[in-house]
Image 1 (cartoon, rainbow, N blue to C red):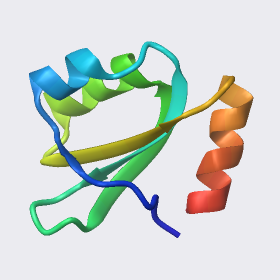
Image 2: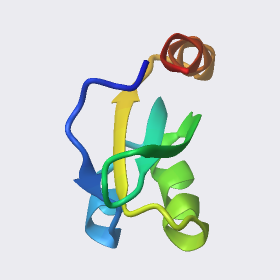
Image 3: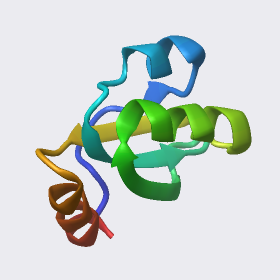
Length: 77
């Protein structure tokens, strides 16, 4: 089940505003289809996605720890 959050453009501005905290994220294409997902420190993970992914959209949810982020991933995949 995908996150029930609004998509944001995957851009430098969005990545700069991403929290420097653990979380679960989804990457999407122009149509809003999830093309990838992951966990990690959100700002760092999204910097990598911006550099290497073909995704154009992103949405995320913050977690209290990396373990919590992994549990969120299991719930949403």
